[in-house]
Image: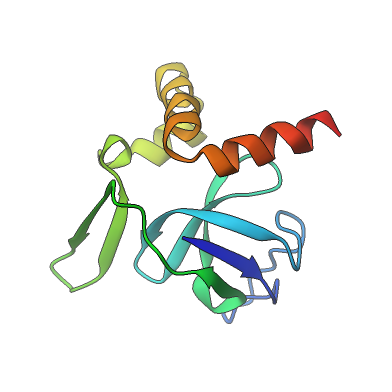
Length: 122
């Protein structure tokens, strides 16, 4: 699944222009209620409001595990990242989680991994 940032200003007032590039295509790493998890321009896996994006490829990866919360909200992402607190640990810099994330990204999201390598070299 891929999306293009069209508007960096979310309905709730959040401004994404400092972490994403307008017009750039991003691969969706997961879904969380009404947000896309993307690897932003700072190489952080962050949730972004879906209203800011145009979907360029709606096909969801077959390896995503999808479930609905008790409130009926949808979550979908790789099984490896499904543990509660996984991304909180990533943002806290837990070494094992950070290392695992980058290995999983290389294996599961080769398009994003290759783009990230290209950006870092330019």
